[in-house]
Every structure is written in C-alpha cells, then in structure tokens.
Image (cartoon, rainbow, N blue to C red):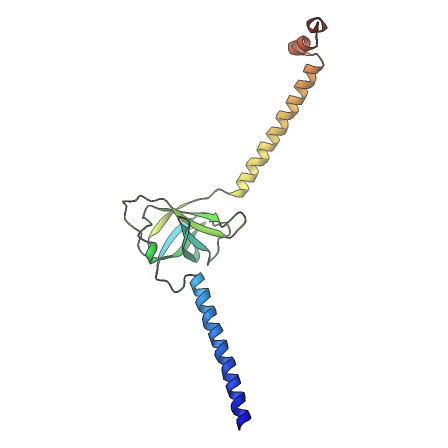
Length: 184
C-alpha cells in the first residue's frame, strides 16, 4: 500500500509540474501577443502588404501597441488589415493618423507603423479605419538602381573616350596640352 501511495504522489507531482509549465507558457505567449490586454479594433486598407502576417506587431512612436489580428481581401485587389491596439494607447493615436508597412530591422519581420495625426484632433475609437500609406518597394528601388548603374557605366565610358582623345592630342584642348612649343 505504501508503494502505491508513493507512486501516486510522484505522478501527482509530475502532473502538477506539467500544469504549471503549461499555464506559464500560455501566459508568456499571451503577453507577447497582447492577448490578455484590453484592446480596440482598427483597420487599414493597403494595395500590397508585402509579406505581412497575422500576429505581426503594430508600433506607434517606437512602442509596440498591438498586433495584426486578421488579413482579409478587400475589393478587387486590396487587402484589409485588422489590428488589435491596446486601449491604453488609443488616446495618443488620432483619427487622421496614417499606417504604413515597415520592417523590424533590415531583414526582419514586417510590422505596421502608425504615425502622424494632429495633437488636437479626436482620438481613434473601436472600428475606425486609418489611412494607409504605401511604403517604398524594394523591388522598385532595385530597378532604379539598375538604371542608374547603366547610366553611370555609359558616362564613364564617354569620359574614358574623351580623356583618351585629349591625351592623344585630338581637339583644341588636346592640341594645346600636347603642343611642344607651349611646354618650353
């Protein structure tokens, strides 16, 4: 009988430890996702979300204030982002604030950044829609850089040809620079 009690107590301790680990894990993940914080729902409509995912962070003035709750298609080719924002920060975000998609670091996760809004305007409320501002597209930036690189190569080739002609004495400047009578 004593062996059975000892085994039951051991199993009970392990079950209790497992439950404690589970509760701590749920509370930790919930705190990271702001799941247990009173929040309001705000939306923004973008033409392209560029890899934004449900659960990504929402930032205002460098402070994490919420998460992306849902991503839905809207109209023909737009995307509606539904965000949960902490109720405690809604007084700082004005109705005329703008939302844009940015990166968390150079190659990090996509985030929503809320900025702007006049200080004396009304604060956002549950269900409001923020104006979306499209971020710079890295693909477009790379295409522009490629065009600039081609132009730079063309300019340097022309400059090389010009300096070659001058050093060979061609043209007025080349003749003046290579004239042996002027050197004396």
